[in-house]
Structures are given as structure tokens and as C-alpha cells.
Amino acid sequence: MADQTLARYVNELSILTMLRTEGSASRAQIARRLSLTPGTITRVVSELARRGLVQEIPGPIQAAVREPGRPAISLALNPTGAYFLGVEMGVGVMRYALLDLAASVVASTEVVVSRSITPKKAVRAIAEQVARYQDARRFAGKIQAAGVTVPGLVTSEGYIVHLPILGWKNVNLLAMLRDATQLPFIVENNANAAAFGSVYTQPNLPSLCTIFLKLGTGCGGAAIINGRLLRGAAGTATEFGHMRITEHGHRCSCGQVGCLESWVNLEAMARIFRGTADLTRSELAALPSRIAAAAAVGDGGAAAAVASLTHYLSLGIVTLSNIFNPTTFMLGGVMRPLLECCLEAVKVRVAEGIVPGMKMPEIRLSHLGVMECAVGAATIAHHHAFDISTVELQEHELRA
Image (cartoon, rainbow, N blue to C red; front, top):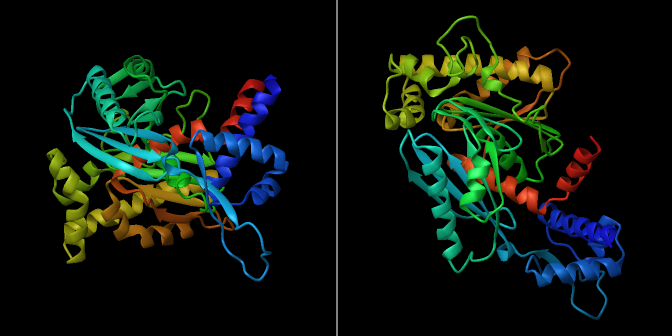
């Protein structure tokens, strides 16, 4: 009986994953694609339909090959069958994104909070937002899971080791969230979440290995290899912003000197463009757009900031290219206006700097925008609940 239950669970996830990544399909197409019998398809699809996760839709009409009889019927995900919440815990701001079963954003909001918010107050705010969504008739009883991202060092168990920007250290945030709500939660580093979301929401993106860099107050990093986040032994891998690329410079938030982060973040741009990094939060937030606009009209300080970002970002990408040989680099974060200014120059420098003979990676900007971390957190929750690759991952962990 246990084997039958596992087989049914695997088959359900296989069908849901196929419909999400490949679109609608007929029962016969699903059976061929997944090597399942018609009887199995009938049983599993009936159960998924009963739970509101799949629905029947009119299939494509191919007059040249169709025979008289029953109209073509395809199966598709029912987007309203389940929802997943993502939360970004930022500096002075919390962002919320709610995704449907098709991994599309159906609701989002941004709330200004204290820059020195405590973990207890943050958890209370998240629990209140969860309650607001659950009270809405549209989402009532359908929110399956949630994810929270933070800009700091997080273990695989959702334990925050160090979050210097908010002053948090050694916080069991996952346990606090579980105590405050009835939802299953995951806690993830913000760059990991943004990276995963950028790939998960584009299932047709050809990328065996994606490196993600999130530029803003800091420089977060993540690597997705064969659809899975590279986590390292304790889940704290890919702190790419703390690669040392020089022997000098301003002290980084990690306490070291010469880190990539200290050369490509907002404060680095402020020092070049404004002569000081002592800016208000709103001034820092507006800085990338201001520099981009000034550079477009020939401002010398703006040009210097763009040139510096191009130089040091290229150094970091060349190093990561030589280590990982990725198919794609995804660049995100609030620095997007400046990244748009220097993207083509970065591509040229990376092509010149990588090991001769190595294939040039594609370098592109993230499509998720300002909500990328919240959306990413929600996609990880979605992945844990309804993606077949999690079964393979669990089996690997049991064997290890």
C-alpha cells in the first residue's frame, strides 16, 4: 500500500510539472510523455480534478487528421486551484507576492517598515498578511505554503546565521513562523530566491547552469544547476558578493576588504557620483535611475560610476564563468537602470576575459523586477509542493 501511495504521489507531481512546464496536453499525450497507462492517467487525473488542480479545456482542432466523434479535450492546470505566498524581508520594506498554481503573480503589495525591525515584529507582520489573504474569498483555504527571503546567511534548515543589514544574528526564523501561522514555510537567502524564481517562471529558458547576481544594498549570489539551487554543505554557499577581487577598497559588510560587493553596490556608486555614501534610504533607492539619466547627457561623475560598475562587475563575472562554465548569467536588483547602461560593455569584457575556448555565457537582466525576491520565495514554496524534482531530491537525501 505504501508503494502504491508513493507511486500515485509521483504520478500526480509528474503530471502537474508537465502541465506547468509544457502547457496543456491530452490524456493520450500525457500517457505517452510520462510512460503511464491510460488507466493510471484516468485515476490520477480524476483525483487531481476533484481537488481542483487540473481542468479540462477544448483541445486544438487539427481538421486534416481528426476523425468524427468526441471533440478534442486537453488537460491544463487550474490556476485557481492553489496559491503560494512569497515574502521579502528587506531593509525598511517588506514585499509580498501571491502566486497561483501556474506560477503567475495574482496579488502583490509593498509595506514600509522600520529599518531596525526585530524578528518578532517581522513574524507578526507576516502572520497578519497571511491572515488577510486567507480571509479573502478568492484565496480562502487555497494557500498551500509560503516562503520568506532575507538578505543574509541562511542554513538549509531556515536558521538565520547572520543578517548584518538588519542586525539579526542566530535567529530560528522558521520555527517562529511555524508557531505564528498554520502554513508550511521555507526561509531562504534573497539572492537564492530571486535566482530560483527567474528560472522557475521561465521553464523554457535553456539553461543547465544559471548564475544569478542581485545588485543593490549588497551583492547577493546564487547558482542553479539542473534546476536546483547549489547550497553547499550547510546551505550557505554562493556568497559571490564576498569574492575578493582587489586588495584594497572600502570595508565590506562582512568585515573584509576588496569584496566584489563593496565595488558594485549602491554605496560604491554613491561615492563616485555624489562623493559620499551617506545618503538617505530614498536617495539611495533613486540613485541608479539618477546616474543612468545623468550618464545619458554626458555627466562625468555618472560616466565614472558606470565605468567602475562595468569594470568590477566584469571581473566578478569572468571569475565565476571560469569556475562554473554557466550557460546564463542573470542580473537583478535595484541597480537595473545602471545595468542597462553597461550590459553590452560587460559582455565584451567577459568575452575577452574568460579562458580561451570556453563558451561565452549569455548575460541577461532578470525579468521579475522589484518583486523578484518575493516572487522567488513563492516559487520555492510552489516547487516544494508541486514539482516532481523534489521527489528525486528527497530520495537522494535519504540515500546520502
